Image (cartoon, rainbow over all chains, first blue to last red; front, side):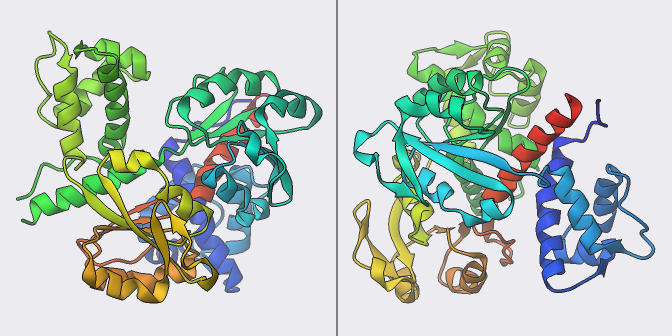
Length: 213
Length: 213
């Protein structure tokens, strides 16, 4: 069934709503108005209402939103009402950092294994999982249910691995390799290109300095 | 001097243009048309022309763009025609990963130091820089020119450090802490909230699965 098309911009804002709602929940706040949320999050109340209207509005605005309900509904929209198994390809510092993030597990992302081509890493552990050789990847995927592959390897390796991953049931790739991956329809990709993010920062910095000379 | 306002969406696309132009340059390609770039990058040629028109168009379209010129101009717009000194706060796996990225240095981002509150890390090295105690940060900033601080520490620590950073000359923060930082005007922030990126992936995945049951 085709859902109503939600813009990428709206989806990008949902995790931030969830973060603020989580903090309100922790503080025991039960209801919040779009005005209060607006001040907290530094966006306009009308933007919040517009965003929420994409999902039916989440309840009566006059009384404010029920924090718990809103949190639960946004979690469901983001697919956080179930668990995902993930593996990491690349056991360098970045791969190990991602394997060790306990926050991911709290959100339902379960770390199942980590692979590298470097034989000297084999047997070392990342949060209880032994680092495996990349040559074992295909067998591992055949014998384990894995939803998400996280790629923290150079771009050449990443491109070469996509077929193995997709042919063996991987449905989503979280891609830190500095390349756009070519995947079949139905395989989801989210890119984190760190140097591109750093360039956005240098853009802001140099632009500000040009304007304020 | 106020420059023409460029939308955030356009700026976000510039690093990707630069990446493709860099690859063309490496292959020795001298000219590229918006149609060719469009096919390579999987965006419409009209989007490319519109984006480039924000910066005066970068030359005659009939003959295609000069790759070297376009690459140089986009680099300048992104502020990559100069060097930036950066330090990292947080010497965990993520901080160490970022310190070790040689790509950043190639782009003009020079790694100057790394700090942590964990005394057991002091003296260990990350790419030639000894890990320093966070209590030395203020002195370090007074005695060294640092443009960018990279925060790879938990959110409580990050919020508490902003004043020290800003008061001691930091002009830009690359923030991996899962919190929105409150900085004075003129201080630039770029956030990389990894768990929010992962949630965008689970959104796509669960949405696809709902639609294709």
